[in-house]
Length: 138
Image 1 (tube, rainbow, N blue to C red):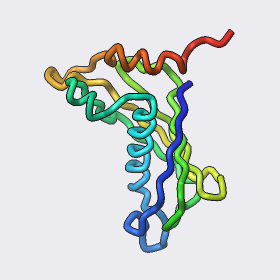
Image 2: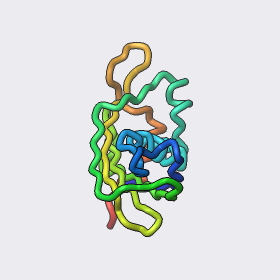
Image 3: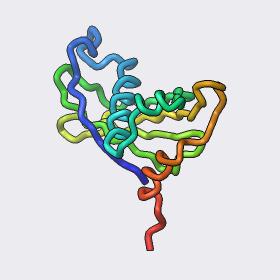
């Protein structure tokens, strides 16, 4: 299983009238964490797109457990539980500064050929970068 984490500080602009992070901003937090997690293992969205591969989001799910507030430093854990194929599913766990789990989420993305706009398998170098995380343990 692939896991990485990143941190995001809640900006004032991210909050609503109650002082809590507006629910729609969690999708942006997922994207930040997903892009950074992939970057940490050597996968660049920019390079993928330049190579003709796009990764649109097919599904986005969130569960709100506790609110986040302005200036909180959130820790976002990203998990990929299955080896990517034509699709890749990311699970998210967001923790507040006290270490409490405040949000869980999931996005499902597809690998799409930029020219044909058809689903495709991930490039071999992407599969190779994920492979060590899915090796069977002895």
